[in-house]
Image 1 (tube, helix red, strand yellow):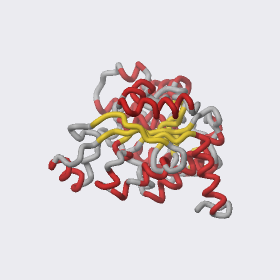
Image 2 (cartoon, one colour; image 1 turned 180 degrees about the vertical axis):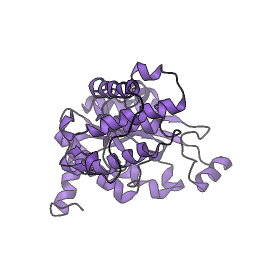
Image 3 (cartoon, helix red, strand yellow; image 1 turned 90 degrees about the vertical axis):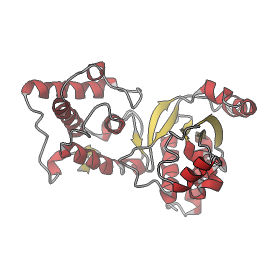
Image 4 (tube, helix red, strand yellow; image 1 turned 30 degrees about the horizontal axis):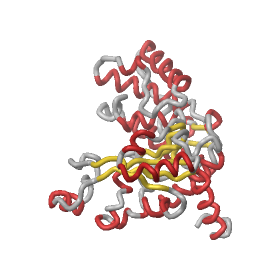
Amino acid sequence: MFVNGIYSTAMQSSPGPIDTGSSDHAMDAVTLAKQFARDSSRKSYMWLPDSIRHRAGDEAGECRLVEGVFTELLNGFTLDSAPLAIPDSIANLYARELDRIESVIASGDESSLRFDLDVRQKDLAILTFRLIPVGAEFAEPWSAIWKRQVLTARPGQFYRAWKFFLLGRHGFWPYFQLHMHQESHDDFHEAGWMETYMRLAELLECNPGHRGWFSSSWLVDPALEQVSPHLSHLRTVPAANGGEIFYMEDDPEGKTGALARSRTRRRLFEEGSYRPRIYLRVWPRDAAIAWWKSRMEGAGNGRP
């Protein structure tokens, strides 16, 4: 349970800390958990210590080690350790995520408890403040926009990108970068995204060292306005309020996930009338904060 910024397993209905097996193995889990807490600052959410990346062992042994590391991190989790300012609207989201992570760890499912899984790496990042829950997705602080790619991806885009990032003094670093989590996407709908945009603006106001937020995805492809209009708000809301959309690359084989959950997109892709493309969505801090405050004023200082 998450109480007053501190996660407490003692208040859960489930048993206390997970038994990690032998004392040597338990010590390995404690040491690794301390290494995550100590060394992961400002590293990518995918970062793992070399001792894990080079570790070879049986699945059951790795499962116990994952259980031990996560249990140590959960038991020691507190928002007081956050290296960034966390507004209340975001602090309130941690209870859901920590309870979800504890449930996964308590399951004992060897196929789900591996360090090489993207979802577990994201959970490790959540517990070490390298990913911050903001609603529909998660924000990775201290991220850089791919300068060379955005300037050279399309010849006609160079001047617009140069004007936005350089003349506009928005720069390429540091930003919050958004990532989707496959096991935590209940807010991935239009109303949830509006709340997410507002939390991101609050996060930016509380952390003036960040220039804005960005994401890169097929979800902000302008073609979706015709193909999947229910997703167009992902592009139009930021773009209409000071944000920018830049082309990054084509996805000629449809491997980015654009075809995974839509029969319409699959059919159009097979017919040759839709090709997924990756676009960069950037909302600079001043514009995002101005939009948020305008929304708050329009709602009488309550959330719209």
